[in-house]
Image 1 (cartoon, rainbow, N blue to C red):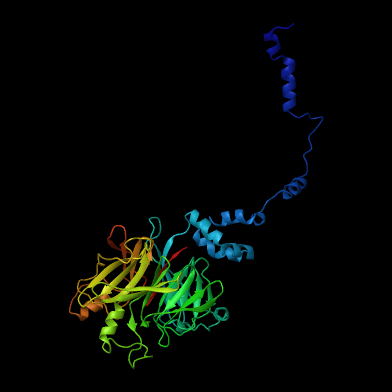
Image 2: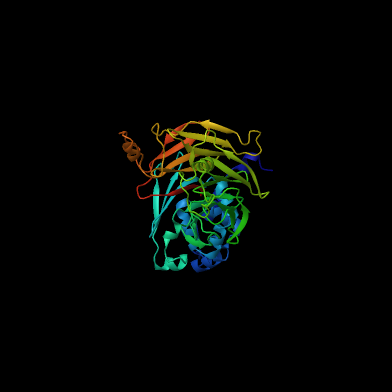
Length: 428
């Protein structure tokens, strides 16, 4: 029996066999299979993105950058349908691809301009401007012959990623991902300078109507407006907000009183007491119960010039005879302090500035921040008329209030092309 060392050794015969197995024999050449046969076999097992099931395709599409979203619906109807699904919105939220974006929209007689600003550490701190100028094809799509004059004193409401531009007798829906405009049903009653807000996926409007005090509700799924309730006060120039299922109708002037019924906008001089009460109060409508809660008034009176909902509260900027005041109303109905008012730090505007119709602000809640945007007028001109010469606060001033820190800061001024704008926040 051979020893272990002999059996484990590599003999010359073994080595020769190993070498022959590594190199081909010239007398028996190897003939590879044709390339076409390999391609055919591969095609039988290849999986394209279009063959993926919906859940996997949604996972892929939800990761594309925001700049690529406008082109996705053009690929095919299936992709367009998936982008409109709630699952796509939820997946982008999970992947942190949805950002709080401030939109400022301005409408002229011939064009619609939009400017966007994002408040994130890694985003561009400047406004981005886009425009929509109707062509003949767009006239057919919009069905309104490009008559943007129907949208004088329009209001903005967002549901998901879509913005609803509500005019006096018409409404447009703008998709913030694709930039498309689609006409939608207008309100039942003619309105101007009214309150509007979204509650539970539907749009509510109130005020701004000289013939009625009805509150209307719009269902985006059915594209239908319905009468929901009668408001306790008939307001003009009011502001809308919503928190915790409650629709807030804030400020404005009274329409119609003792022979003045039906007037479009009575002056303050005609009924100063009624104007004061309406200008500093707000009505609360509980959408779920279809009932009105007790009305509230801003402490100290004044005239509400801007308001919004943010971080579970309603924030109000009020103008007084010689100063501005900024208020926080606890709108969380589960809180024991519901309905509590608290005066907070006023925006850093020049002292003793009384805002009038020449200078107007829009107040927008952006996450845990309140953004105050100057949409009309020039503060420098306002100061000059009062004999003061301060400079540096012209058109398009943007101030940001940190609800947690309680401090104000200044953001990039709004672009000059945006005038008499309406503002809102969209998560897109």
